[in-house]
Length: 440
Image 1 (cartoon, rainbow, N blue to C red):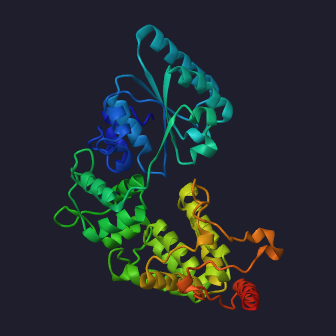
Image 2: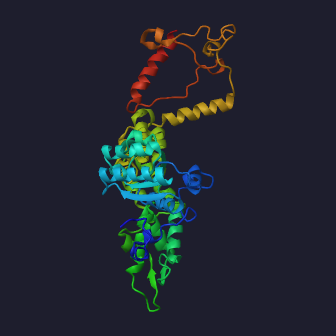
Image 3: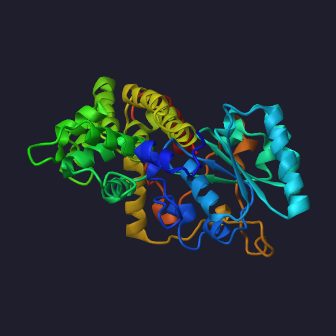
């Protein structure tokens, strides 16, 4: 049945997530970065001047809901199709109808295509002329990266908006509204404990549809007590969600204890423990970006130059998270964790930058030696800038003895490589350069 149909019967029997679909932007929760006051997309919708867009985001983030809100707001003819059940012939018919509607009646047609990534190239090409001419305003919804799944020609004529997983405050607001709204569970005598609601919000992992449907299941399957009230406590919520709560307060001590154990397991070269603490955080609903940020820091702080690839692995995990999303990104993140945990360790980078910062704080702004100064601007040569500079690539082994520090700091050493991993080779190379300096 069409998700945008306005049928009392449909509203009565539809899942809670469908019944609670907002009727206006004022009821829409989340995505403030694109729909907040003053944002361009919000103005385009409210002023009915929308152009073709692609909504890209994880399940339950509000793509279809936003399409529904637009259908309630626009004065044009709104058509809703699913890419899984629509062929090229129907898309061509819709494009032709949109052309005629605009030509003979001056009406705009807005076509909402759910799961647009499932349209093949030929099907997408059918829509291109109508979109290009303005006969059809396209709203495509996809959970996949549109740059990979949607034809470049269609993308170039559309604005892409990325929706983020809903935050816990958004989900909590939606759950409370569902319990109090006549469209929702207001007519059912029920009590949901704060612990149960918190668990359902956390286990939903940013997905409003999962939250609302699990909440409805928990309420409807709970037998009324002697007073006729259905009491949903933590045990009921855990059973409804088929997941037990892991004690984990993201704003309290336990949060910091777990991330501390995670980092110390990485530093201690224990991949099994590191993966365990990572799984604890994922299961409890920790923001995966927070975990990847800690990986990035740890790769430089505790692995460093012993294996510089560790930092690249952490960066790749972050890239995978942004481009693939959870839960799939848990795999490349786990790979980075294993790599970093098993890599040779060195904290020489930390010591080096701390030493450099300390000497700058102590000595202030020492003048740049004349041979190192910039020579690219007019008059620099007349002031002697660059005089005596030796270009290393003009010498054997691309190295020449030359002073690069201010005169008062000559001999200062910030970086002291260890004997771990690749850093052992670096240490030998720097020792060779030091011998050349001593002989000069």
